[in-house]
Amino acid sequence: AQSVAQPEDQVNVAEGNPLTVKCTYSVSGNPYLFWYVQYPNRGLQFLLKYITGDNLVKGSYGFEAEFNKSQTSFHLKKPSALVSDSALYICAVRGWSGNTPLVFGKGTRLSVIA
Amino acid sequence: GAVVSQHPSRVICKSGTSVKIECRSLDFQATTMFWYRQFPKQSLMLMATSNEGSKATYEQGVEKDKFLINHASLTLSTLTVTSAHPEDSSFYICSATPGTGVPNEKLFFGSGTQLSVL
Image 1 (spheres, rainbow over the protein chains, first blue to last red):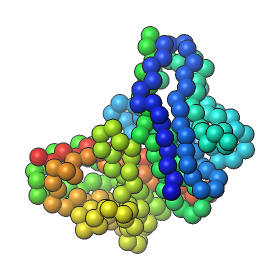
Image 2: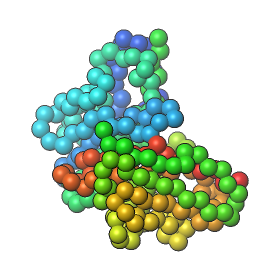
Image 3: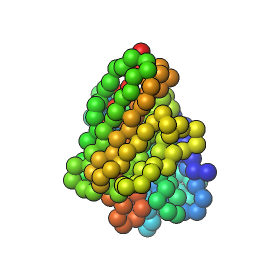
Image 4: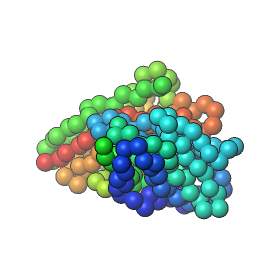
């Protein structure tokens, strides 16, 4: 069965500092991995995805994520956090086979402090 | 990017009433739509998958007679919570995919519906 773990409910970081939001996954075979962001009173928005190719994936708003197959991780990173990055970040995974839906993590709330 | 419109965004109803939630893909044809539910401090949990013109596929533990899903067109899916009870209070969110290219690579979400049953 597919699963996603986001070990931190909350991450606090000072503005201008680098940020990391952790995600580990379990899936049969190769994974499709996604990060979504949810700002207050708005729907989930796609940030970035890993399908195949380079392990370092660059996405919207300066975010990037690194796929690590041996550690089954897909941590989200940004070199310099902004206050406007404060939101809920959700990691998701699905396997390659068929039209299967995504399995989501619980989400990590990021607070960037000025 | 593609837009999925979901409404209402919030609904409060009395126990025993039925509530309909609509999910529309505004600028693409959604061959498949998914309905999720999220309880506080928990992850989004898939309730059902609906393909246009066919019956929805429900996940284990989801009552199909209670959560009626209709996907009559390529741009509209509805979720009706029948005879709602307080335990059905939750955040419901839909997502839609055009179904082209890599399966589910393109997945777009509605903004969700917060259902409160009194």
